Image 1 (tube, rainbow, N blue to C red):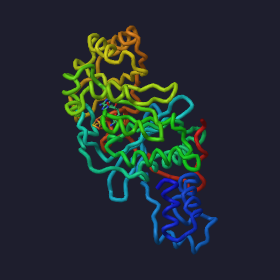
Image 2: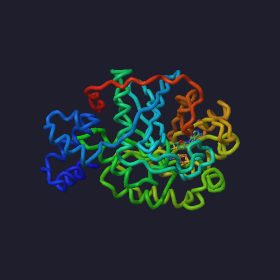
Image 3: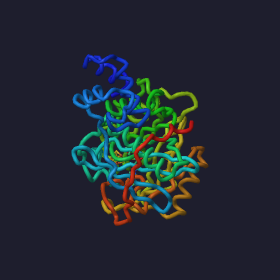
Image 4: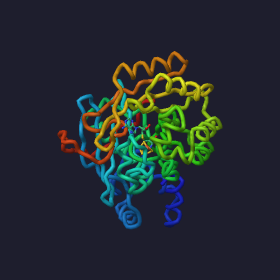
Length: 358
Ligand code: SAH
Ligand code: SF4
């Protein structure tokens, strides 16, 4: 529930409206996971509430830590589904990559999540709880670290779960709740054109990342079947019309696959395609996994591709793989354990960590 939903719920239960905000703040600001923790409510009120509502969420089942410090959090839902979220150290801060669905229906040929198919959408509570569990874990294992950025780049296509995506964004950015700045949140999509148009009209304004991954329709058709529905022309037209906040740019993600989309000519086509866009390009060297047969290009091919992009005036960033030894890197989330040691969990009870530093 958003704050407004919680207030409406309270009124519908014939409770005072302020009770909705009180309980909502306990959950989304103070991190309460049970009604019993809400110590400024009488025991009678708490038990009344517990009869009529549940505080939904996830259970943190396992944590794996990579040698580069990346942590993969395995979480289970009330109905036994399993999802993954990743805490990625970025200098002094941490970026958390969260999931929006159990599996994914989009079927990109290079992605391990695709092989799960779509099991179900996550509800808004399950989306935001990944952040709350991430904060709790960090408070326990690395008290000085703060989650500064959130990226919807875990399992699933966020725009296929549109309503829950929007509700989760409203909760995470509410200054009475999780207090994250919208400019610190990025939603990544494979390019669902009608939903992009809708997203542009919302009052919540996350950053936008688009998985382009190819410089032309022939290649994109082959690696992202969704391109046959909304091709590059339609996608870029929707993005041209997308209302960007001041000083913001669209991020284009480009998974570099050896021999598929990594030539100098591909870089040239990409530059032509994106001319005139306020954008940056994230080059993501393919992360291998058993479900696909692609290869990561050799380091000199990656460097040559990036140099050509730069020469042609594109602002590009190379996404160095993080957490690939525990299958936590981009495109490797698929409910698989590779035998790396799993750290037994001890989640401390008590006050949650303070909100992230802006
Ligand atoms: N479904 C959304 C967000 C999750 S995927 C989307 O596709 O944008 C996050 C990113 O990981 C996407 O840019 C995708 O292209 C990339 N990716 C998928 N599989 C990958 C792999 N095996 N190696 C590197 N990047 C991959
Ligand atoms: Fe789904 Fe994104 Fe993977 Fe494509 S890359 S299958 S949209 S999670």
